[in-house]
Image: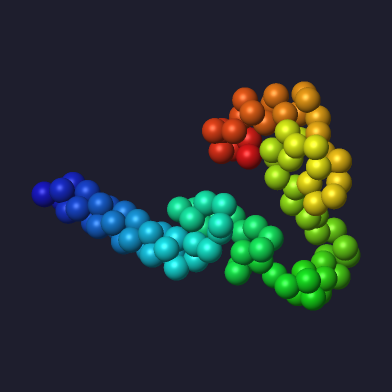
Length: 103
């Protein structure tokens, strides 16, 4: 009986966590890249900081913020005006496109 109660409580806790995560994802999901995931924010999304907010934050960390360049940029001739093509990098990016930890 004690084990059954413990399992029931654990499952109830998981249901609460799952509901909370689902709600958070639906509320925070503004990405035009992947509306089903809210763990990443991209430039142009509502969640992305303004230029002044970015600069203010960057000044607090000594200018060490790095602007994200998508991994697949190596498969294209340029990204935001910068040359990015790299054949070997594109092969690696293509091979790992479904590998979330690599991304």
